[in-house]
Length: 112
Picture 1: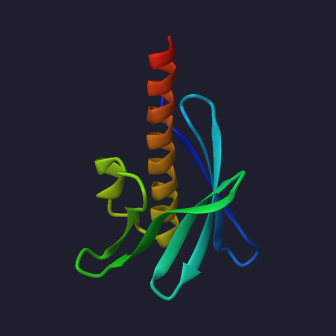
Picture 2: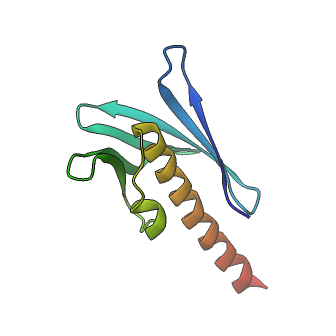
């Protein structure tokens, strides 16, 4: 079973948020903040927003990519060639959720 990823758009058609539901059934929400270099992806948590990735255009490849901040993303997701900045941001959110899901599953397995 794969994570379910939903991108939310504002009235101008700009991606502003991402919701990812993990394979364990946990939901995570992320926000996208744009700057001159691309986008920053933050997880929205109880303690506020935490930066989890940056995304931008890679001219040599002709696509968008993301870089994880504070975690090692899944190789398949981080090396993907995303067609839009919103897709790269959603890929980053999915990779972060996947990593969080793996860590939670390891804790559950250790307790049992």
